[in-house]
Length: 105
Length: 167
Image (tube, rainbow over all chains, first blue to last red; front, side):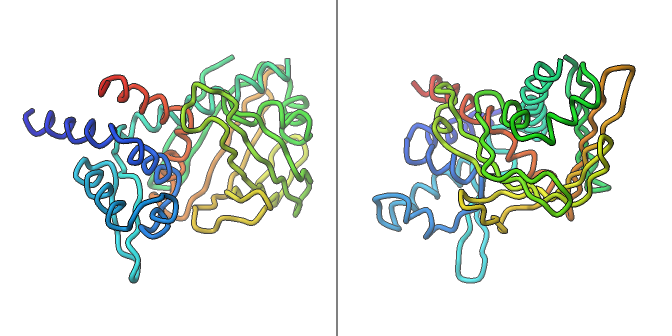
């Protein structure tokens, strides 16, 4: 439980910053290298790396090495569990198909 | 309106989406195969679709953009997500198969994201139509990836909830 609340503290602290929320929104859709992320912001490499470190500590993102590049992506269970993702995905299709349904009646 | 059912079959690397629409197969088929109809429903809730290219024929392609027009979707508002369907086989009124890609506005395919083969099948159920959409992946991870990409709606609302908590 202690570990759990500490984890939540990390997540909240991490998401309290607009740059980090923006980074999260980006890596949620695709994998980015750190240099690609640096190019998106008016910030030094070190500043972006620091943001990423905080996000990594909150287990919101994961990094992996690809040759000389460090790639950043959303952690598989960041914010939501696998089941919640699936439900979200289901709801997206529900929204689409309900529109289709109205159209074909 | 019925509930959409999503089944994750990681062992066989398949994702199956099922829905029963309250109209005849012929009309449902048109909703997929005709540009005007397709544009009216393809985008998720709060997203508008416009097809730049619409050649619904074997070997043809559909290139479309989905724009978020719902201010309540936070970071997504105003963003456009581009995609391409490369149509492979079409069995008129019964099924069609396509390769599903993310792309850019010019139609260039994004090859760093998983491209899956999707088969859509249509079954008559006494005037209603059962739509079975199966995505075939190369690895189980691609299925998880696909689901993650589908969180368009949920993600920003999730962040907003956290925002409120953080104050």
